[in-house]
Amino acid sequence: GNSVTQMEGPVTLSEEAFLTINCTYTATGYPSLFWYVQYPGEGLQLLLKATKADDKGSNKGFEATYRKETTSFHLEKGSVQVSDSAVYFCALVGRDDKIIFGKGTRLHILP
Amino acid sequence: ETGVTQSPTHLIKTRGQQVTLRCSSQSGHNTVSWYQQALGQGPQFIFQYYREEENGRGNFPPRFSGLQFPNYSSELNVNALELDDSALYLCASSLFVTAAQNEQFFGPGTRLTVL
Image (cartoon, rainbow over all chains, first blue to last red; front, side, top):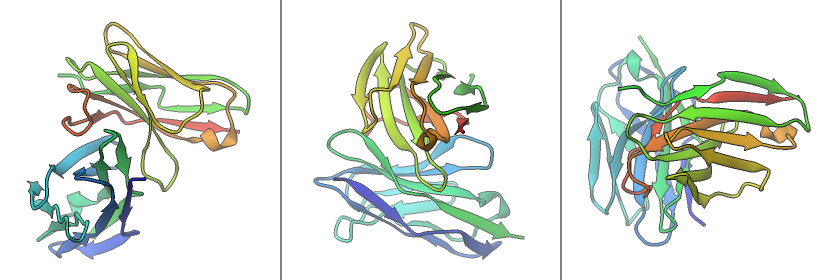
């Protein structure tokens, strides 16, 4: 079945550091890929998405590229801020049109 | 524009009891999905409702049931509660019924503890 694997946290970085959160997936065909973010005390919010191979999703300085050859959708940001501290979830929607989330990666940014 | 709201915020029940969780969709959204998020895990899809009918279900037993009302608000009912039902329950609403197309808007969740 479909699955998403993302790097375990917590990830702790200093402000202005470069961020990468790895995400790989298993699915038949060409799933749609998503990153969601959950800030403390809030619901999940869609951060970015990509629906076909080589697409790049971007939002709020975050980027992720849909890599079919490596079945990956790694999240990157060039310079993180304290306000980026949150839990990040990678997710996919496959042929069955059901969304599958990874376990989440908690990110701490130190001032 | 009002976002997705859920009630109650927290709930404590004992094993064997029944619980009802409520969700108000974002204005104009006709599709609502429910998720269970166990501690340290990602959300798991329970089911989706579109125009008051169930429109897809994850791997959850029949004691998890739901309703969607004409105003698109929704309820999640869980019967015969088990300890493993302790989790954060998330409701999400969207404009389109197709998960691949839509952006789902999540509520803050209801934290259920089963003792």
